[in-house]
Every structure is written in C-alpha cells, then in structure tokens.
Length: 317
Ligand code: HEC
Ligand code: HEC
Ligand code: HEC
Ligand code: HEC
Ligand code: HEC
Ligand code: HEC
Ligand code: HEC
Ligand code: HEC
Ligand code: HEC
Ligand code: HEC
Image (cartoon, rainbow, N blue to C red; front, side):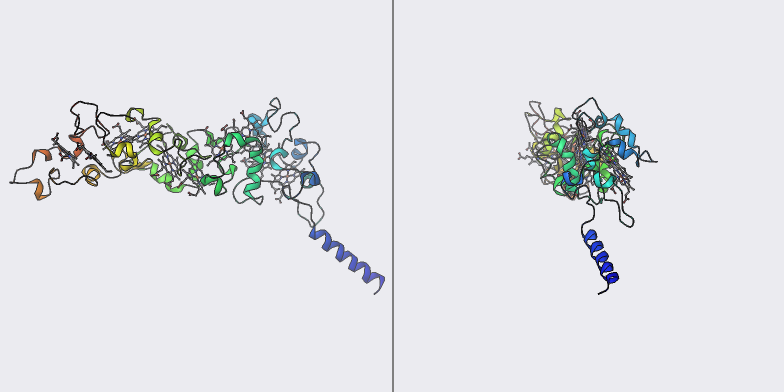
C-alpha cells in the first residue's frame, strides 16, 4: 500500500468516524457535554431577531421576560433562552462545511424534538401549575405539545383570552366549531364565554376534561338556579342535563337534543295522555282532547327542570 493510498484511507475512516458522531442536538446529550452558550440571549440575538409574523422581542412584555422575577427564564441565575430551548453550545458554534447546524429544541406539533422533550422543558418550571392530572388526560397521553395551545413569543397568548381561545382549540377540534355555529348555542362565538368555562385543558377527573367532577356540577357553576333540590324533581334533570341538552349547541331552541314533543316522548309514552293531534288516539270522538290544544308539552308542563309549588307534581307550576 502506498503512502498516498494509506492517507486517503485514513481520511475516509476519519470522515466515517466524525459522521457517526456529529455534534449533538440540544436534547440528545448531557447538557454538560453540549454546554450552554456563554453570553446568553446576546449570542442568540447575533443570528435571530424579529421577523414578519414572529416577534422574538415580544417575550419581554410577558411573565417570561422579567429579569426582576428570579423564577423567570430571564431572572438572575436562570438560563435565558436556553431555559426553554436547551443547551446551545453546539448550535451556536461553528458549523463545518457540508454539515448541518445541530438543532435547538423547537416547539409545536411536528417539530423534530420529541413532544415529551418539549413538554419537559416547560414542566420543569410549571409542574405545579399544570397539575397531576396532565399525564393521564387526553391531551397529556396523546402527546399534545404545550406549544400546541400556548404561544410565548407574543405579547398576549391567544389561548388565555376568551375571545381568541376558541380558534386555538378549533385547530384540532374542527367538529366543535360546527356545534357553536348552530341555531342555538352557548355564546362562545360572541366572546361571552370560552371553552374553559366548562373544560380544564390540563386535565380533570372526567373523560371530557370537565371543570367539575361531573357534567351537572359543571353546568351548575353558571346555572346555579337549576341545582335544586326541588320539591318535585324531574328525574332526568338531576341525572344528567345532556338527557335533553347538547352542551355546545344544537339546531333546536334551547339547545335541545330534539324538538318539542318528540324530546319528551322519547321517554314518555303518549298512552293515556294524548298530546299529538295527528294520532287517532288524540281524537276520541272527532273532538280534540283538551290536552292537545297547547301543542307542545312545555306549554302546560312549564317547570320542566322541577317545581317548588305545593301542587307542582305534574311540573305545571
Ligand atoms: C451562528 C448563528 C446562530 C446562533 C448564534 C444561534 N442560532 Fe438558532 N438557528 C440558526 C440557524 C441558521 C437556524 C436554522 C437551522 C435549520 O433550519 O436547520 C437556527 C434555528 C433555530 C431554532 C429552530 C430549531 C432548530 O434548531 O432548527 C431555534 C429554536 C433556535 N435557532 C434558537 C436559538 C437560540 C435559543 C440561540 C441562542 C442560544 C440560537 N438559536 C443561536 C443560527 C443561529
Ligand atoms: C425558567 C422557568 C420557566 C420555564 C422554563 C417556562 N416558564 Fe412559563 N412561566 C414562568 C414564570 C415564572 C411565569 C410567571 C408565573 C406567575 O406569575 O405565577 C410563567 C408563566 C407562564 C404562563 C402564564 C402566562 C402569564 O402571563 O401569566 C404560561 C402560559 C407559561 N408560562 C407557559 C410556558 C410554556 C408553554 C413553557 C415551555 C415552552 C414555559 N412556560 C417555560 C417560568 C417558566
Ligand atoms: C389544550 C390546550 C392546552 C395545552 C395543551 C396546555 N395548556 Fe396551559 N393553558 C391552557 C389554557 C386555555 C390556559 C388558560 C386558562 C385560563 O386562564 O382560563 C392555560 C394556562 C396555563 C398556565 C397559566 C395559568 C396557571 O395555571 O398558572 C400555565 C403556566 C400553563 N398553561 C402551562 C402549560 C404547560 C407547561 C403545558 C404543557 C405541559 C400546557 N400549559 C399545555 C391551555 C393549554
Ligand atoms: C418560555 C420558553 C421560551 C423562552 C425563554 C424562549 N423561547 Fe423561543 N420559543 C419558545 C416556543 C414555545 C416557541 C414556539 C413558537 C411560540 O410558541 O411562540 C419558540 C420559538 C422560537 C424560535 C422560532 C423557531 C422557528 O420555528 O422558526 C426561535 C428562533 C426562538 N424561539 C428563539 C428564542 C430566543 C433567541 C430566545 C431568547 C431571547 C428564546 N427563544 C426564548 C419558547 C421559548
Ligand atoms: C394540537 C392539537 C390540540 C389542540 C390545540 C387542542 N386539543 Fe383538545 N385534544 C387533542 C387530542 C389529540 C385529544 C385526544 C384525542 C381526542 O379525544 O380527540 C384531545 C382531547 C380533548 C378533549 C377530550 C375529548 C374526549 O372525547 O374526552 C377535550 C374536551 C378537548 N380536547 C378540549 C380542548 C380545548 C378546550 C382546547 C383549547 C383550549 C383544545 N382541546 C385544544 C388535541 C388538541
Ligand atoms: C357549556 C359548557 C361547554 C362549553 C362552553 C364547551 N364545552 Fe366542550 N363539552 C362539554 C360537555 C358537557 C362535553 C361532554 C359531552 C358528553 O359527554 O355528552 C363536551 C365535550 C367536548 C369534546 C369531546 C366530544 C366532542 O364533541 O368532540 C370536545 C373535543 C370539546 N368538548 C371541545 C370544546 C371546545 C373546543 C370548546 C370551545 C370552543 C368547548 N368544548 C366548549 C361542555 C362544554
Ligand atoms: C361558564 C358559564 C356557563 C356554564 C358552565 C354553562 N352555561 Fe349554559 N349558558 C351560559 C350563558 C352565558 C348562557 C346564555 C344566557 C343568555 O343568553 O341569557 C347560557 C345558556 C344556556 C341555555 C339556554 C340556551 C338558549 O338558547 O336559550 C341552556 C339550555 C344552557 N345554557 C345549558 C347548559 C348546560 C346543559 C350546561 C352544562 C353542560 C351549561 N349550560 C353550562 C353560561 C354557562
Ligand atoms: C327533561 C329534559 C331536560 C333536562 C334533563 C334539562 N333541561 Fe334544561 N330545558 C329543557 C327544556 C324543554 C327547556 C326549554 C327550551 C325552550 O323551549 O327554549 C330548557 C331550558 C333550559 C335553559 C334556558 C333557560 C331556562 O332556565 O329555561 C337552561 C339554562 C337550561 N335548560 C339548563 C339546564 C341544565 C343546567 C340542566 C341540568 C341541570 C337541564 N337544563 C336539564 C329541558 C331539559
Ligand atoms: C330521559 C327521559 C325523560 C325525558 C326526555 C323526559 N322525561 Fe319526564 N320524566 C322522566 C322520568 C324518569 C320521570 C319520573 C317518572 C316517575 O317518577 O314515575 C318523569 C316525570 C315527568 C313528569 C311528572 C310525572 C308524574 O308522574 O308526576 C312530567 C309532567 C314529565 N316528566 C314531563 C316531561 C316533559 C314535558 C318532557 C319534555 C320536556 C319530559 N318529561 C322529558 C323521564 C323523562
Ligand atoms: C294542555 C296541557 C297539557 C299538555 C300540552 C301536555 N300535558 Fe301532560 N298533563 C297535563 C295534565 C292536566 C296532566 C294531569 C295532571 C294531574 O293529574 O295532576 C298531565 C300529566 C302528565 C304526566 C303525568 C302522568 C300522567 O299521564 O298523568 C306526564 C308524564 C305528562 N303529562 C307528560 C306530558 C308530555 C310528554 C306531553 C307532551 C307530549 C304533555 N304531557 C303535554 C296537561 C298537559
């Protein structure tokens, strides 16, 4: 083997060895190994800045950019940008020709840093805010990124305001947008309330992430007058409001599951109590039964949620 060929081989072996151990991405090695960038945010600002649609500086208008708060990423002794994006030693260093820059941890669905890694960066400071229910919740267990809902390089996080929050949720829950466009719905579109009026996005005791232990308790937080107890209860009401109502919205008055008599008749047999004019049972001798005149059950049984009147047994007063 000639000296020239031998050195060529050495070069190939060297190249193979370095390719097998490229500089590592921020989440792939011991932070001590990658190292933090020494001048903090100033180093990052050397290459990054405001761009159309992305205001790096806006963070300094939020809780995260407060040097006076020692818990903030910019508080004394904290790691500044690297508190969230991970150690930047390799990323900020010189990149050899033909190699790609080792990545920082970036945030959101579909980013190369695994979602678990992203979320751990936030949870390091926010475990107590997010709470123990997160891991088992549909968002936690389906690996939804914190940044799927939260933006931090922005003066006001859209998910934290009632007016802008629904649009964030609809990015993943398209079908729900349709519910709130129906004829009768909770005033979410009007900005009077948001999804968080009923849901705890970080997790809760219920499947549907409700703010209270069950559906009815959730409704009572705003509709306290319907909590009862009533002298005369209507059994399906304390059982579950969604026996009759669609919580988001429906195409029937009062967000009802079905309209007028059909709703009631889904549980109550018409026998003995004719109320629909177009059955022959309702027309014994060609004369309408007096109970038919009012048409809809609620015209007589007005207290459909329960009655406190001494003679309200039939929920009529
Ligand atoms: C020498 C220039 C330079 C410096 C210094 C620098 N970056 Fe970068 N950064 C880049 C380039 C170039 C990209 C685009 C990389 C790509 O698309 O592959 C990038 C991408 C990123 C990304 C997107 C994720 C990724 O890595 O692809 C983040 C987040 C980021 N930088 C944060 C930082 C932070 C935080 C600092 C300070 C610790 C920093 N950068 C310092 C050049 C730099
Ligand atoms: C170094 C610690 C630290 C890290 C890391 C961190 N935060 Fe924070 N965050 C804070 C502090 C401190 C506050 C202010 C809390 C307070 O005032 O009670 C805050 C507030 C917030 C708030 C509330 C906003 C407000 O105006 O009150 C949200 C939302 C938030 N952080 C999300 C995140 C997300 C998402 C991540 C990960 C990308 C993250 N944080 C990473 C320290 C941190
Ligand atoms: C499904 C959307 C969603 C996801 C995912 C999510 N959050 Fe939130 N988070 C919210 C909403 C909405 C609020 C505002 C609640 C309110 O003020 O009504 C909030 C509030 C917060 C707050 C400030 C309020 C407080 O409790 O002190 C912090 C901090 C926070 N989130 C951190 C996180 C972190 C960390 C993660 C990831 C582990 C995360 N969030 C994931 C929707 C989400
Ligand atoms: C509190 C955690 C946190 C801190 C501190 C933080 N970032 Fe970010 N950064 C994020 C999140 C989350 C995103 C994703 C976009 C968003 O939510 O606004 C992001 C996005 C970015 C991006 C965009 C990458 C892309 O996709 O193009 C860059 C660049 C970046 N950050 C640089 C920085 C620099 C530089 C600093 C310090 C001045 C910094 N970040 C401080 C959490 C943080
Ligand atoms: C980045 C995508 C994403 C965003 C944004 C998001 N979610 Fe989710 N959500 C999911 C995933 C994934 C699941 C679990 C799978 C499923 O049930 O669809 C889920 C589940 C849920 C569930 C439980 C559904 C069930 O059947 O038990 C509720 C309630 C919910 N999300 C509410 C919200 C609210 C409120 C917001 C806005 C504050 C929001 N989500 C934002 C992805 C998202
Ligand atoms: C008035 C209370 C209320 C409001 C406001 C509300 N929800 Fe719900 N949501 C519920 C209840 C109750 C359920 C469970 C329904 C059931 O189990 O029958 C539910 C179920 C869900 C589900 C799972 C079932 C499905 O329909 O896909 C998702 C996702 C969801 N809500 C997202 C949202 C989003 C996003 C918003 C805001 C735009 C929102 N919700 C606003 C009460 C509410
Ligand atoms: C965060 C507060 C809040 C919660 C929780 C809440 N609601 Fe409401 N609800 C409202 C508001 C506000 C209105 C509109 C009142 C108005 O327009 O006068 C409303 C209206 C209604 C209406 C009448 C709609 C119409 O078209 O007349 C029904 C029915 C209703 N809610 C059922 C429920 C049910 C069922 C639940 C539990 C799943 C629930 N609400 C939980 C705030 C709430
Ligand atoms: C047996 C069926 C039924 C059940 C169960 C039921 N509702 Fe209703 N609710 C109705 C009907 C019918 C209306 C009248 C709708 C209309 O015509 O506008 C109504 C109207 C309402 C209204 C509008 C204003 C009012 O007070 O009349 C609210 C709010 C409401 N229901 C909340 C609830 C809540 C909260 C629950 C659970 C605690 C519940 N409903 C359970 C049938 C029911
Ligand atoms: C989900 C099933 C269900 C629906 C829907 C329902 N009910 Fe009921 N209703 C019941 C049950 C169960 C009772 C209790 C029967 C008993 O105690 O024997 C009851 C009792 C009643 C009573 C009192 C009966 C008595 O014996 O004193 C009246 C009146 C009544 N319902 C009217 C209505 C009207 C009007 C509607 C439509 C708005 C309606 N119900 C919808 C299940 C339902
Ligand atoms: C014109 C008024 C009127 C209309 C409309 C009406 N009811 Fe009645 N309902 C009554 C009267 C009166 C009673 C008997 C009350 C009593 O005996 O104290 C009654 C009794 C009942 C009872 C108690 C059991 C029984 O059969 O005596 C139920 C359940 C009931 N109605 C359900 C309905 C349903 C469901 C509808 C609609 C399909 C409806 N009602 C429509 C007037 C009406």
